[in-house]
Image (cartoon, rainbow, N blue to C red; front, side, top):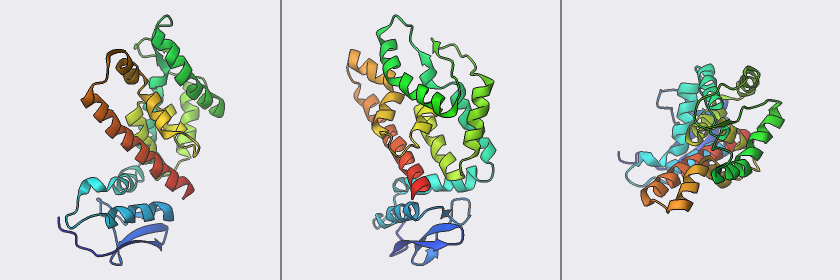
Length: 232
């Protein structure tokens, strides 16, 4: 598609901020006004439009796509988004460890245990740790408390959490990423600890490394989206 506008800018509107293309408000894929909660996010989305060349590249609209998902999918049914996030809590990667005699187990303890322990302390919950891959249901009280926490979040934060939890296979890591002081790269390394471990032992697979880097960028962008929503 040819570029059909000259200027992209963020402007205040009822309920938040909206990207304007030559003064006309952008709509979501679903046809809803693409109103976002903060100026910082709207300006970042306007920058995506501004960075387009003569031909529009859909791959350049990562923030726009995340906002559309929040508006068109999450906002009409936030309970469904919360249920999907709770599924990641029920099978969180950080809870599934190698056998205690394995060297990998010690690495998992060093990297994963502080993250899981921090969430337990913050929310007053307890997670089951499992050696092996056989699923074990997490305590009902833990899931209920996490649901109450997730119910407090707006659709935009839930959308970002959904992206991060899916990429990391961990609600714990996704929630940790909401902390403005969190190290996004370190969290992504933690989410992929086993892959990193295998690469250290057997050498790096170029295609696997490239895929990991692409997904890591998606994780970092979702975190930036959440930060702009929450602090923008």
